[in-house]
View 1 (tube, rainbow, N blue to C red):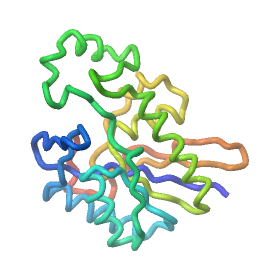
View 2: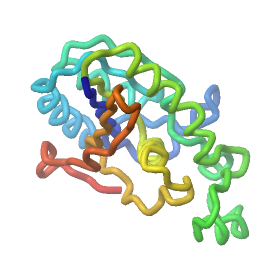
View 3: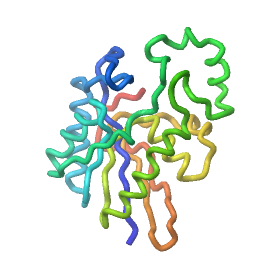
View 4: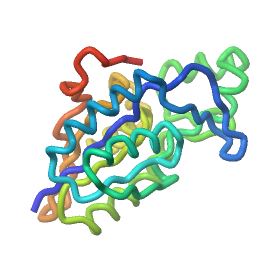
Length: 207
């Protein structure tokens, strides 16, 4: 039986870096807009037949998952594999500290790692085993709360694009739904939809 994985981007976050020294990455919480977006997402998903909810363990994702699960009544399975791509020193020092790198990165001709951070392929290597585990563990549809960069990597990998091509996707909107389907008979992953925001109405905030 075909199953779906709903890739949910977290809600809008408060301004500022909010660097988590222990994790070495930015870790901001949701702002009021993000909370309203997430309430709308939860209200929509309560009508879906979802078997489980997985979430990145970063604050903006965990808060999104917790609000969604007030409506869907699931326990949340947290995983660091679903964290946003690690941009290394760039959030701390700014792009201006890496001007030569930025000029090359902006061309998106190669899947370049961020300085002291990850490349898209690193994200794929940590996320894809979790997706494969999800389809083994669950017989019904599953929701995954994660980040825009991760969703772009997953979609690119699903359709066989070089990961430098992930920037051809518009970044997913906050609390959008992108849907993968998996057919166990041919072991094929398919992209069913991308960046569905029909539930958000007037609270949609694009990057």
